[in-house]
Image 1 (tube, rainbow, N blue to C red):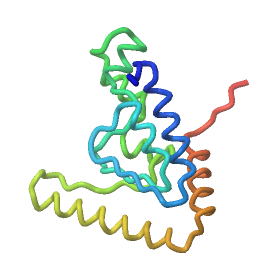
Image 2: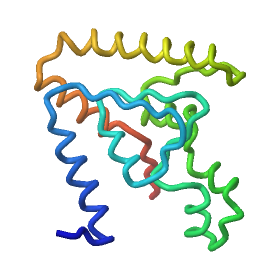
Image 3: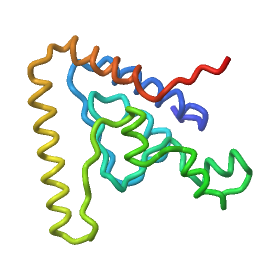
Image 4: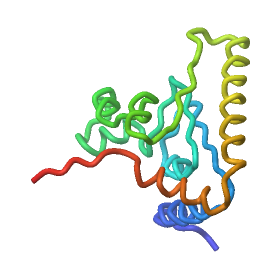
Length: 154
């Protein structure tokens, strides 16, 4: 059976719904540019780690500016409004930890980042070992419910 274009959103929503019910811990790691509908699904995790220079959003800044202003050249302005940096997303409680990156891009730096990720994953797994399946699901639910901020405008 061929999947239609409009079915992608439904497939992502169903995947997120099923992920939310998993009785095992989910750890997501954003290492580069996460900017598609599928990026939304990795947010349904007990813990989300993100490299400090990565970006994470369901839409690229070019796509956002094309939709909002009908002008993809305003991508820098769009990126600022979208709050897609690790620091922004940490402040909005979308991610749980920012993994520092060295300034250079050398093989030795890749090893440092890998070791930092390994250390953080071990900490999370160790913490999750003491939780029941129900607590894991509940923690994930509460994390998702507490993301972002709500401003009431009366």
